[in-house]
Image (tube, rainbow, N blue to C red; front, side, top):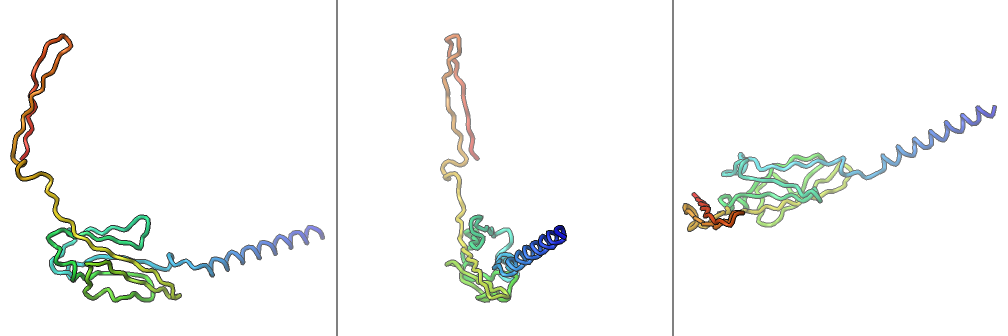
Length: 165
């Protein structure tokens, strides 16, 4: 009889423990699992912009901060970009399918079915082309003579020539 009571007590304890874990998971607010966000700038919606022109980076410390880099020759597009955003959620605000001025950061908020919100901020910048060498240095040749002393006290001259084209 004691073993039946002990077995019954253990069974009741397990049922209570299992149900309390299930309720905690159901009541928990896990907005990350209910949201998905994807960003692109489709060339069909952005005349003059190619996939190769754009670099999209997500901040590893904060996945809601996204930086986009355009080359200098595409600077004029920064005020008239149309993002392509795919998301999982009830709705997104503002409407991403219209032209946006990205000369300042633009934020998009996704609302889940439960009414929770998560905001993504997109910052677009333009990178000027970097000229690694001044024009005066390009297409030039430099010669340096080094005087090297050998172990036997004799000196010899080594010539190093550097050409930049």
